[in-house]
Amino acid sequence: MLSSLGFKALLGALVVLIMALLARSKNYYIAGLIPLFPTFALMAHWIVGSERGVEELKKTVIFGAWAMIPYALYLLCVYWLIDYWRLEATLLGASLVWILAASILIYGYPT
Image 1 (cartoon, rainbow, N blue to C red):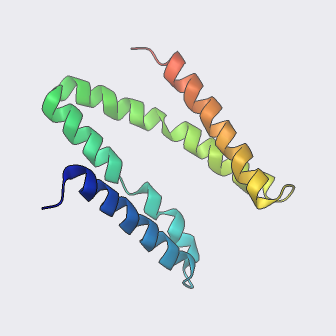
Image 2 (tube, rainbow, N blue to C red; image 1 turned 180 degrees about the horizontal axis):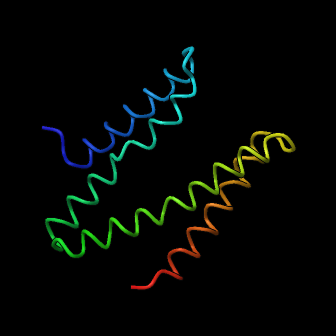
């Protein structure tokens, strides 16, 4: 029987495979939608909801909504930087912006 960890690894591999296949298709841009399927959010919400309760789940959901800001900044950086930098530098720079924005969110978020 597949362990919980093994199942999560298999699920992650399946997501990567779907993204790779879509990236090669005529609808390549849909590959950008696949990572946004709430696979991990579903797991996190299940765990928080079942172990912590409804109020904590609601707080987790609100924080998750705020967490879209670092991702949006990442996307904007990729869109803008790719015209000026190589792909590797663009992705690294955008990732650093995501890390900075996520850090600000984590440390500045009222608990």
